[in-house]
Structures are given as C-alpha cells and as structure tokens.
Image 1 (cartoon, rainbow, N blue to C red):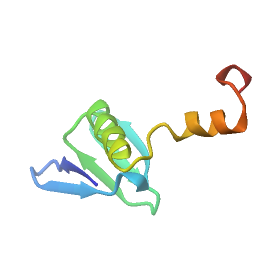
Image 2 (cartoon, helix red, strand yellow):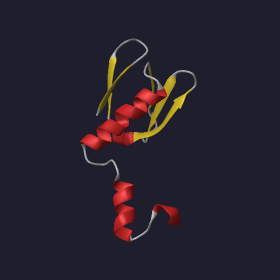
Image 3 (tube, one colour):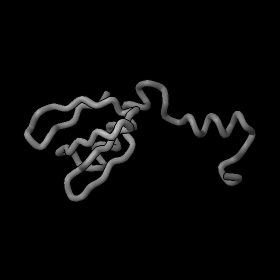
Image 4 (tube, rainbow, N blue to C red):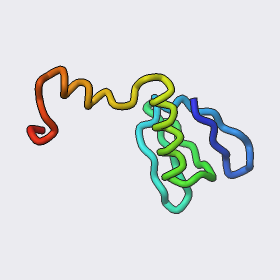
Length: 78
C-alpha cells in the first residue's frame, strides 16, 4: 500500500498493485484496474517512486530480470 494526499489534504492509501496508469494533466491522476480514478497532490515521479518502493518491499521488483535469466534469454534478445 502507498500513502498519498488528495487535493483536499486528506490521506489516501492505495494498493499499488492495482494501479493501471498515472497521468500528469497537470494534476496527477491515478487510474486503478477497476476503473476508479484518484487525483493526488504528489507528482507523477513521486507516485512512481512510492510504487517502486512498495514493489521492492513485497518482493515484486526485478521479476522481469529474473524471468529472463531463468528463460536463458538476454536483454538484447527482447
């Protein structure tokens, strides 16, 4: 879970695994897989960093690299 701030200064806790897209238009808009949309004060880069941090905490960061290694493929082959 990542904690963000709504435009009304309220904390918002999101399950980062459900984030489908993040846009900066200029407000940062997050769309979840289920279609829900949230606008937050944090920048796109801050949301990305928080999401990557969360993935690292739960052991999801770097799975593509591990999968490539197990398949015997190298990055250049993709």
